[in-house]
Length: 185
Image 1 (tube, rainbow, N blue to C red):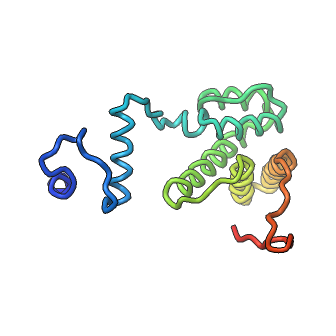
Image 2: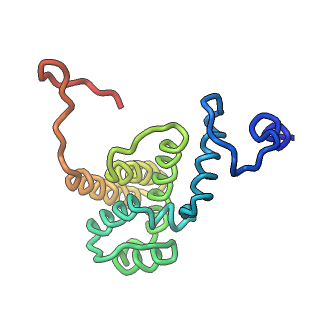
C-alpha cells in the first residue's frame, strides 16, 4: 500500500534516477533522495554495523582511547571479541565488571546516537559519551553487592574524572557587553 502512495505522490511514471528534490517533499523523502543521489554518484555509504557504531566510528575510537588511557592500555578494542580479550588483559582483577563496563559504554553510545539522529541534538565532545557511560555504570552499581557496588562506582568515578580532566577547557559563552551568557543544555 505505501509503495502505491509513494508512486502516486512522488514518482509519477518517472525513473527513480530522474526524480529531483522539491520544496514540498517530506523530510523523510528528501533524505531518501539524498541517499539515492549518493548511490547514483557512486560514492560509498558506510554500512552501519555493530562494530562501526560501537568501536570503529572516529568519535567512538576517541572514546575507547580515553578509556584505554585511564586503565593504562596502549591500544583500544575494535570489536566485542577484542574488548573481551583487551579488558581481561588490562583489568584482570575486575572480571565481574567487564560486561557492565561494555554495556554502559555501548548503551551511552546508542542513546546519544539516537539523540543525534532522531532529535537533532549535538554531542559537544566524546567526553560527554564517557560521562554518560559512567552515569549508567554508577546507576547499575546500585544493583551490586556492597563491596562490588563501591568498587564499580569508584571505578566509574575515576573514569569520569579523568575524562573531564582530559577534555579541553573552553571559556563560557559570552552574552551582550561581555557578560557570561546563561546556557541551557
